[in-house]
Image 1 (cartoon, rainbow, N blue to C red):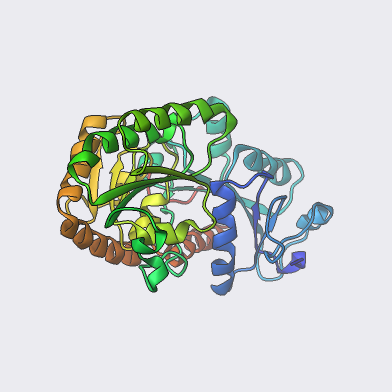
Image 2 (cartoon, rainbow, N blue to C red):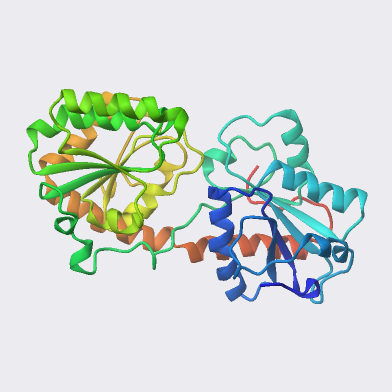
Length: 360
């Protein structure tokens, strides 16, 4: 859907062709921000046809001010997008203000720090990522689409519809690799499932060629333990949402993570969560109420946290119900869209190059 540049107040560039978490964020947020009355469009490859956008040939029109504002906002989420924004604003003198969203949970390299200092506003996706920033910033955590991710509504959403053995399901979703802690989940299942015959473990997600031997080793260990019918690799499934609804417990055992949306998707599906403290997981979960959080990479702690739920499915159901309420109150996608739009309004109102933000 092509946009007139004069109507575009915010540009959300996407300088990556392959689907990524950043791309998914842009795709989900822009329609909600437009519902708030914001003139926002994107630029770049790999985006749905229905998303408001403009082409590279229209870039020179960014020298013209938008109809309703003194300048436009260029909202970068990657380094190369920040570089483009700095060039257009500072060298080409386009009437732009620059916003950057940082999800990294590590010390930034000197060039990245220099770019960040050139921004007019910085958003951190979690308090943890904000702790690595040396500039004022606003924390806006990602949200989840509670219309797409919702509790069971039909018989198809029940675990029995899967045709798999057992009464209860425990799942670990996402790319199969060491970083994601798939092996920690498998080790916990090999240790626990013999004591809890009503539970079946499900692993979904893509395994790239470089991680195929990692997956094969896990499958061999499962077969050796005699649990090949109860610890299942389903690969990439057509609709992950229904599998969240079929679970009684979701496990996110990542060793490291950028942000990590899967616990929110699980809780929005009324599923209890056990997670490591990687990424923003610890900022999503209320231990003892919606799930449990353990130290990343600690397989023994992960196993014991899971055991509590396998031994008491009613507790998993209670924490799943609490998680649903928690997500609906604190993490709806609409809340993220509104908070980012509020940052834009601060930038529009500031006029100059003073960095806006709520924390330093």
